[in-house]
Image 1: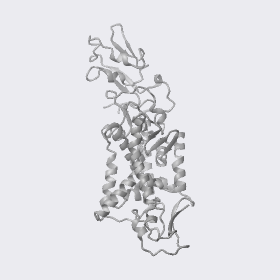
Image 2: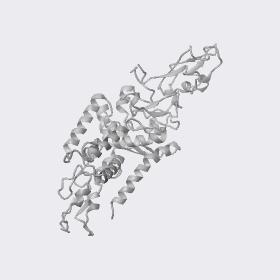
Image 3: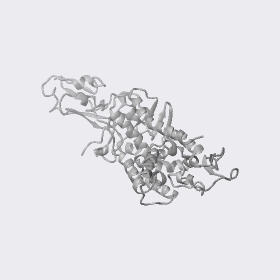
Image 4: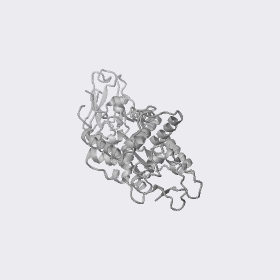
Length: 263
Length: 161
C-alpha cells in the first residue's frame, strides 16, 4: 500500500478545510467551527494540548471544557504518535514543500545540527515560564499551525492577514537557508507536547530484519527523511512524526519490507 | 492613552482576558455580523490576535452566539440575556450631538437594543445615556450621523492602558 498518496490527500484536504470552514461559517453553516488551536465538530470540541498546557501556566487554572477538549488529540497521539504533525499540520506541509524546492535548487544549509530532543524540551520550558511571567499565551503566538489556520480564516472573513504570519515566513526562510526543517525538528512547542503522549504500544516506525533480512543498507530511507533521522540506526523518537516517508522510500520489493509501522 | 479595546460580550476583565484567550478566532468565525475581528500588531503586541469589536464599522447586535463557542472560558459561556452584557458604556458628547445642538435626531435612541432604557429622550428631546443599563454594544455609535460619532462606547473590561 502506498502511503504517500494517501498522506498528500489528507494534507490537501486539511488545507482546503482551512478555507472552507470559515467560508461555511460565513454562509451560516456552523457545524464545523474553529481553527487548529481549537476546533469544533458539532458538539465535539478538540483543543491542542499544548494550548491547554499554556493556559494552565498563564491562568494557573484549567477550564473543564478546555481540559475535556484536549482528550481526543491526546488519545490520537497515544495510539498513532505525532500523526498530527506528519499528516495534518499545515506548517509541516508548507515546510515539506519548501524543502523539496530547496532540494531542487540544490541549496546548501549553513548549519547541520544533529536531532536534539532536549533542545525541544528546553524551548518549551522557556516558553511556558515566560508565558506565566508575562501573562500572555506565548504558545498560541508561537503555534505555526494555529497561526496558519487563523490567518486563512481571516483571509476569508476579513480579507486581510495579521502580523502573526511573519513567524511562518521566518520559519520558511530559516529552514530554506540556515537549518533544514529547523522548526518541526527542534523548536515547535505544539509538536513537543504531542510527543509527551507516547507509550510502548504507540504506533512507531520499526526496522526489523527478523523475517526478511533483505535490507541492503542502501540508506534510501534515511535520505527520504527530511528530519535527518535514520530508521536503520534507530533512536527515531520523539522527533519522528510517523509520516512514513522512510517506509515508502524502502526499495525492497517484498510483501513485507524490513521497515514498517507497528503498534 | 487609549482605552482597552471593546471585547465581545461576556469577556473576563482585561488582564485576565489577555491571559486566558488563546487567540483561536472561534468567536470571530461564529459572529454572523462579522463584528468581531482579530486585533493586529498596531493594536499592541499584547492584544495581537484577540477578538475586538470596532463599533463604528460593525457593532455587536447581542445575538450572543460567541460566548458559547469560546474554548478557553475567556468569554463566559453561561451568558444568556442581552441585558446582562457589560461590554462598555456609551458616552455622549453633547457638543457634537445633533439633537443637543438643536437638530431633530433620535438615531441612537431608536436603534438602542435596550430600547427606551439605556438611552432615553429627555423633555427637550435630547438623548441621555443611563450607564446602569447600557450594555456597550455600540449600535448607537454605529448609527450616529455625526462625523466622528457623537456617542462612543468606552470599554468596561479594564482600566485605561
